[in-house]
Image (tube, rainbow, N blue to C red; front, side, top):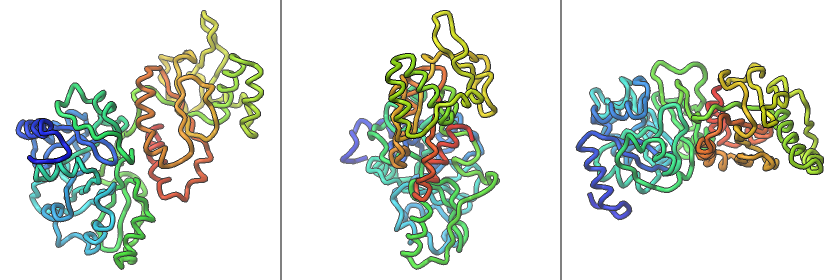
Length: 399
C-alpha cells in the first residue's frame, strides 16, 4: 500500500488487522468509524462483539467512489436518479440505502437486509484507506453500542483501547454527528431515515439541479421498519454518567442558590441578567432541592421525589451538588455553576461539540449530568440542521 497521508507503519498495522480479521479505527468527517472489510464474515462478527451491537442492526458500508458502489448494488432495481444525485452530494455526510445484488459480497455487514447503506466519506484518510484496501469497509461509529459517537482520537481510544489494536488519528471530526441516511429504493420518493448534516432542503435542491423535482423527499414517521437502519431502533448517543434533563425554572433556581451561597450581592445581578426569567420554586415539583443537608452542611438534591420526567436511579437518591455537572445549551451565562459546559445556540457548534462535551463530563466522573436545553432553540427550527440536532439531543435524553 502506497500513500502520502498515512505513515507506512500504520498501513502495515491495517494490513495485519485485515489478514487477521481484526477491526481497526479510522477517522471520517462525521464521526470515527470502527472498520473492517465488508466481505469478511469473521471481521464483521468481531465488529458486533467489540461494539456489543445487536446483530439485527446493519452496518453502513464505506466506498471510495460511485463506481465502486455500483459494483455491489443491483443497478436494474436502483432508481434512475441515484447516480446523478450522488454526484451532487458525495463524497459527503450522506448514506444511500440501495438494493444490492443477490449474494452480494458485502452481505455479511447487512444483517440479512436486501439493501445496503452506502457512503463515500469526505475525509482524505478514510478515502485513502478504502482505496488502498481495494474493497468497501463496514464502518459503524467507533464506540460501545448505545453511547455517544467518538469525534476525536482521545474519545475513541478511551472507549476501545482494550479491544482494538490499530487506531488512525485524523484529528477532530469536522461535522461531529453521523451521516444523513436516506432510502433510495423507489423511483419517485426518497425517505430520510436519520437526519444529518445534509438536510431535506439540500436533497431537494440537488434533485432540482438534476431535473428530478418529481422525486418527493420526506422524513420517516412511525415505529422503526422491519428492515432496521442504523440510528433508528436502539438507544444511541448516551453518556456513561446518568443524565437528567431539567427545565429553565429548575436551572435558574439552582444557579441563583449557588450565587446566594457564594456572594449575595452577585445573586441580585445574576437574577437581573436572566432578562425576565423568574427564579421560582415551581422547579421543586421537578427536583426537590435544598431541603437536605449532609453532615458537612452541603446542600444536596433529592431525585427520588422528583417529577415524572426523572429517571435517576433511586439507589443514589441523595446527591451532593459537588457530585453534579452541567451540560447547558443556551446563550445565557451560567458560568457560576461549577463543572459546567456551556454551548451557545448555534446548530453547527452544537452538532460538532455535543458528543465531545458529554465525553468531557464523563471524564469528570460525577454522579449525575443535568442537561438544560434552552427553549429558544425552537427559533432555529427553519435551519436544515435543526432536525438532526434535535434527533440526537432527544436520543441523548432517552426520548
